[in-house]
Image 1: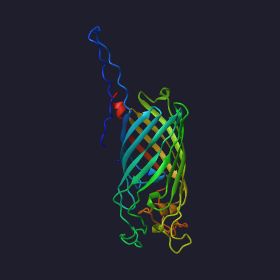
Image 2 (image 1 turned 90 degrees about the vertical axis):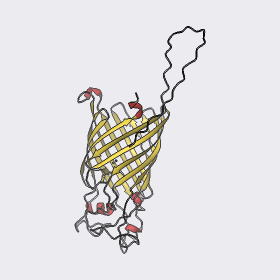
Image 3 (image 1 turned 120 degrees about the horizontal axis):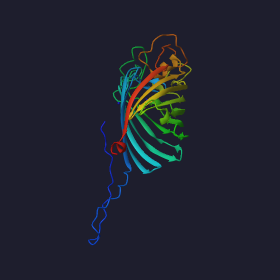
Image 4 (image 1 turned 180 degrees about the vertical axis):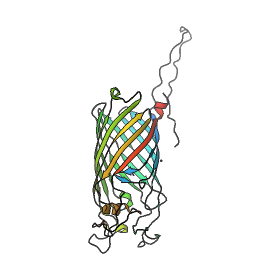
Length: 322
């Protein structure tokens, strides 16, 4: 998930052979033609943030998280790029998983000012434990009675179009789909719209220091879980029909060379009861947050307002080799 922690792979270079000259040609220095640019490139970077928030919900229990990634790329032509990547983030999940390992890959075609991104993303959460006294092999419920699977890993297909209106304005969208969000059995579809204003050089704060403002509004649609999370004996049947919710964020970023400091406000419209049912927060408490899918009344603050400060640094091999 969003949720966000390398070895550097050097880009392959294609060299052009020097031309041969006849023996009777005049002897003089001849400049060799410039080497054709390599179609290969590698992007990589790292980040640290005070809270890892993914679609409005903390993945690190509102604690500090680190992240890192590496992404080899192959440019078929200037308008078509293939890529694969892997990323790692530190997390704090109810099942005791502490690391998120991501694998992803896709294609990025561009058509003038329109850039598309299509691919598949796998979110892995190793090291989890099962908590549910009603399921054979589990070690019991969490201290507050919540349950969670040991394996929460899942995958999503995604489509992300962006319209680069001009050098400053970009308008985008996101569409993600999974047949089983967090391996819960509940299908999930996420749709959102984004807008970003990047200040031109004439509006720079100082030399090499740029800035931008961006925001996103999205909706997460969720289906019904399998019986592991079921409310047996209730009108809801053998699974929990997770509540759909809206999420939004807005923030400002400051850039200096390859470094970016992003300051962002994030929130959702999930109440504390439905948040607890969805997250299984081991720190949820209380008895008054009763909803149809949260009859015990526990309340979680994992889905509420959050301020996220993220410092990141990003490189590409092609830029470093210039």
